[in-house]
Image (cartoon, rainbow, N blue to C red; front, side, top):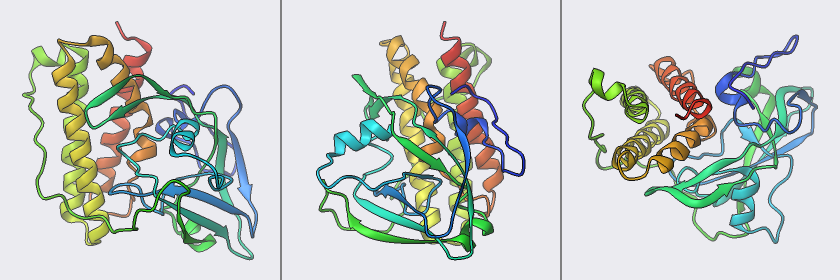
Length: 280
C-alpha cells in the first residue's frame, strides 16, 4: 500500500507506517471483532513478544514450515524468531476495532544484510490493532499456546544486550547529500530514541526489547554504510525493507519518551518510502 493514512468513521486511523505493511492487491477494511472471536500471533526471540499489533485469523497449520510462515506473512528472520504461538480472545460483552487486509511483500534480510534473490512475498491476512490502549487491554485476553510446528525452543524473557552497537557514521551536509547516508542519519536518530526509551523504562522486559531493537537498527545502518560503494542495488532493496519496520518495532506509547521514538520510527519509514518511490 502507499504511505498514506486510512480513515473510517468512528474508527481509529490506520497511519502511513502501518498502511504500508498491507498489500494494495485487495482493499484494507475496518473490521470490528465480536466477543469470543480469536486471533493468533507467532512470536519469539528478543524483540517479538506475545503482545503486539499484528495478528492472524488462524494459527500456523500443524504441517506448516517456518519458510511457509515467513513468506506468507513477510516476517524478517532477524526480527522475530517465530518460536511460539499466542492466542487472543475477545472477552464476553466486548468488541474490538481492527484493520484487516492482505500482507504486502518485502525483501528478506539477515543480520548480514539483504539476502540476494529472496523476497518475502506476503499474501497472508493480518489484523492491525492498538494493543497498547486501555480499550484493547480491557477487551482481550492473551495466552501462549506453545511452540510453533517447526520449533522446540524454550520461551524466554528478553535480556538487556551486553553492549551497545555503535553506528560508524558522522553526520555532515556532504553525507546527507547521498540518499543512503541520509537514511543512515534517520536510523541514527531512531537508534538514539530507542535507547532513551530503554534507559527510562521501568519495565525490564520493555527496556530490554527496546535496547535490542536499537542494536538491530544500528547493525542495519552499518550494513548500509558498508554497501554504499560496493552494491548500490543492495542498498536500494535494503532501504525498501524498512517500510515494514512498524511490524517489527512496536513501541508502547505509555513508556517514557515513547513519543520521540515513535516519531523517529515514522520518519525512517517515511524516508524509506520516499527513496523507494524515487530510487535514482
